[in-house]
Length: 301
Ligand code: BEZ
Ligand code: FE
Image 1 (tube, rainbow, N blue to C red):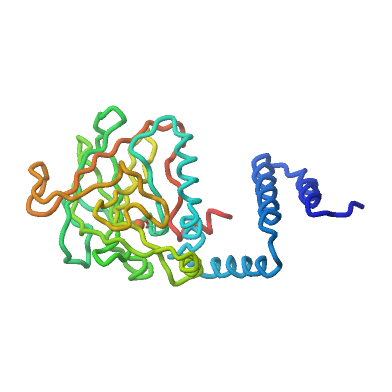
Image 2 (image 1 turned 45 degrees about the vertical axis):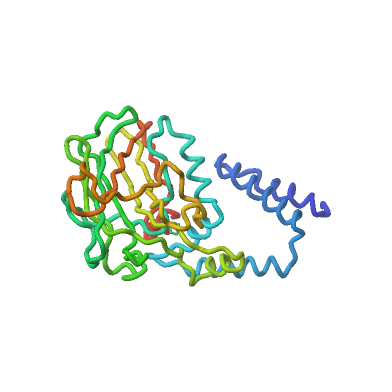
């Protein structure tokens, strides 16, 4: 029998996990144990802190519902989701427009609209026109590309927060025309606090962080043979454009509406033009990192 020390306990765990038949599970768990043990040694974790962490993670789990994913939120505020995104993008055979976080408010069964329609079911706030073209990396149009969009209303709330999954608003699916062009009407989104009423919000307050995301509009764009693009465009005039709580902004995704855009397909409302480029996809490759919260439990089965 081996007597354990603060260092040999790590090898003892590796030994017990050594027969794991799935090589990826073996690799991931060994690395996780190594880093967790190093972390505990590094900060000299106390029993009280260990229990607090377990209590915190328990609350994170208890806060999850089919319409709310507190674990994804935790991953987001720790920059972990942004890191997984960046790592995933490095695996692409070809990259187009920069990606951004899918976030916890994506829903897969949003309504379909015709080009030019408004995604706002309940809001009469100042309108915004979004338009552009979906092309490949070289600028070749991708006919009939699909464009899914979701955003907050003009008060900074998602439908999932307002209606708890009972009603959809400010989201929709569009099919581009034969030139890959799309346009639709929305409202000017407002920056918002990430959900602050749960354990992640408590952590953000304890760290004296503001907890805001700059105003943005999410996009999920697809075309046959191309890597699905999950991204968002961010409004330049938002005060938190340089300090996003979840690290989703890159400079190529920052935009400003124009008041009298002569090229806009609908006149009289401020317009944002953004052209999206898709990279070619290897077989079964997707750029998607994340999922509809209601799907996540079944994925773990
Ligand atoms: C979002 O953009 O919808 C989002 C992303 C991460 C955390 C909270 C919200
Ligand atoms: Fe968002």
